Image (cartoon, rainbow, N blue to C red; front, side):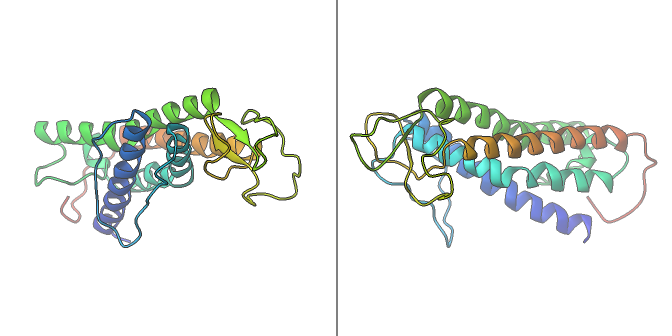
Length: 215
């Protein structure tokens, strides 16, 4: 795979994820401003979903998908040389990444497409952990916290348990105890690749500049 192809795949994935995360973040703040993008497969949440539900969807998407963004950026950085800015795969504008304007653009892209999703993940996690309640279809059964163990642990993701804000027993399906562990593990993987990316961007400055395909 060429560096140009890798950059195209990275930009597509990173921008789509950013749009989704931004929308979920806005919904948790009850904001009317969202980024809209037309896709063959469109996410449409229930009209009655609470901000806890939006936080859960955002956390799931970041946990399951986001790790690929710093991972692909790390792979790209390993094949570049000359400057840290050139090692980062964002190529939205027709300017040299190593130039002063290019460094500014790359810095903004890094903050929006790498740092912002990680910050949003912390935001989503705080909402889910502090306000989330795991409820069952029977309203007479008291709701518990996200770390509660399921009554029937062998029946994973069978829509028995729902994550809500505690005011209703209706919300996104949720697997107590297992899902928060999985989310934290995947976020740790994403953070690890982000650190590897920064290290490889630093190393790119020390590698001799090679003449390859245009950046």
